[in-house]
Structures are given as structure tokens and as C-alpha cells.
Amino acid sequence: MSTSTAKQRVLETIEKLPPDATVEDAIERLVFLAKIERGIAELDAAKGVSHAEAKQRLLQ
Image (cartoon, rainbow, N blue to C red; front, side):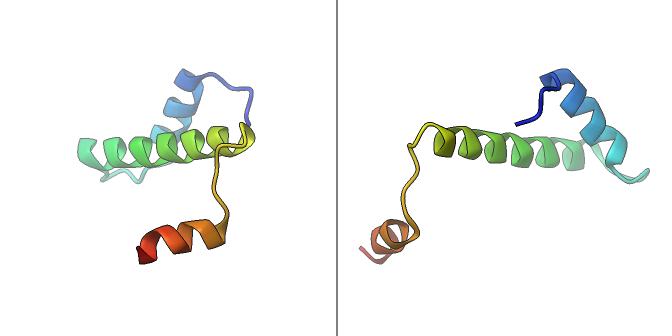
């Protein structure tokens, strides 16, 4: 994972948005990236599930 601070990652994300982006667009992007970071952290901590297990859970 990146060694940049949360504030730096937020600023970088906002700077990459198109000029006509709304506040809602920025919030959606930040929430999306936060969920990705949380998922990666869970996988790093061996808290993830295999593809087969995820598929089985969805079929129940």
C-alpha cells in the first residue's frame, strides 16, 4: 500500500477529477477508494474468502 497520508491521497484524488465534477462525484470516488483500501487491508490480514466460497455464499 502507498506510504502517502490519507490527506495526500484525498487531495490527489480530487485533483484527478474532471473540472466539471460535482461534490457528489468527489464523495462517490473517495468512498469507492476507501472501500478498495479496506478490502486490500482485509486480504493482507488473511480475512478474505476464496472465489469459490464467495460464489457459494451468493448461491445460498
